[in-house]
Image (cartoon, rainbow, N blue to C red; front, side, top):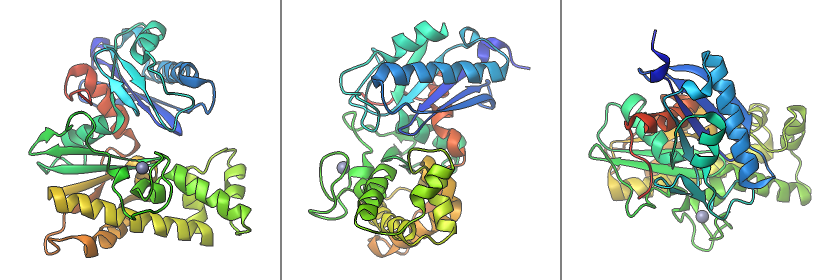
Length: 329
Ligand SMILES: [Zn+2]
């Protein structure tokens, strides 16, 4: 039995859900809670929901949040780890100006809070504990609301000047589809769940037939979650099938292009859609990558995240012990 002082919290802040975990000294998950990410109310509404999720996870682990040695947060957007603020978090409501996530949460939770980049901490967790363990160089691809990327090269995180890893914005088609980032032809414009949902809504407006939105309502959702996409694919919904195939083609081209540049040993596929679709989807993406690989006789391994939905939360908790470095900068 681990002393409470060694328990740490980790929060993975996503565009659709907030995953809060409590882990012990061996990085085992001993408490967990999940909340929907608020779609309105700005950063303070999102941060309040993060605090609530963390308190629930602590309760599940049998401790008060104030008994945790600390809480790490993996956040999208521009993370300033020194001040614990986050700015420009796209896919989150009205989150432009810097918001003091660490101060807000430490006030609510009664323990210190550290903030890092969501995808980078998840990639480091996969590198240390998950599917990336056998390798020295990996590319993490997190396929969810958007498409994020993280890099470990020669055993070290590669952050560039702080903004590296934005694989979602690899251009897969010049002058192509509009991306949520405001540019055109990005991989995320085809493969991100937000972009796919926007496309599905436009197709329905034009008269396309699909069960996607019916399945969404049946599940009491307001967005096309990974589970909704999976259910639609299982019943061979034509629009869902077409949009997912389009996404896989874009992922194949974009990931292969990154591999041509970096020659990593393995690609680790995570994120809500990546984890839900699992290894069969990793293999489809690998097949789709193949024609674009320059060194096509030795393709990289493509593996689903070994920590599944928990890689972001566990990586965030690792910020507290200093096992991973805080994201950007
Ligand atoms: Zn983009």
